[in-house]
Image (cartoon, rainbow, N blue to C red; front, side, top):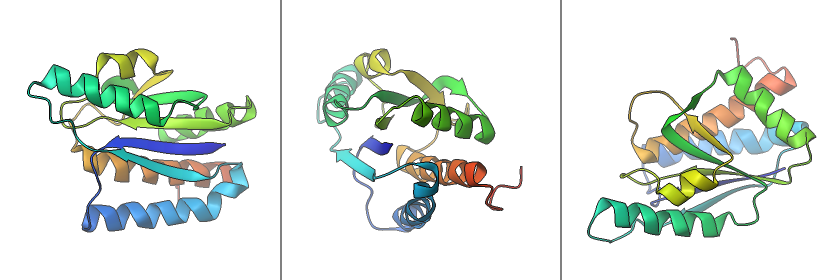
Length: 160
């Protein structure tokens, strides 16, 4: 099952990128054992529109264009469903077992997601009730993907 992270903004050099790459590499090493891969990142630039609604609409259209072929789209949204790491792992396993060939995560920009991205998402997922910087969300997401893979393979990383 191919996994795409489609995100607004570019992850620049720095500690967030280093941490993202560390977990991405760990995920790549273990993900074949659970039937995931390849793992891709699609970045789009932040919209330059003058108001927030126009920016969100523009970014939503461009994010969705990057994941057009995805069988399942998951929008990360502060108002989405909260799940445990174990439940997240089970959900991903169920998607793979159901024959989903491509699963995409959508990460909005500083203004959040446009209505179209939320409407076309199969699942709206929250990483918590607190507002998080959108660049840090990538790190948290890839760590949770890695954690899910370790849960499914019985690796000792997850001690929950």
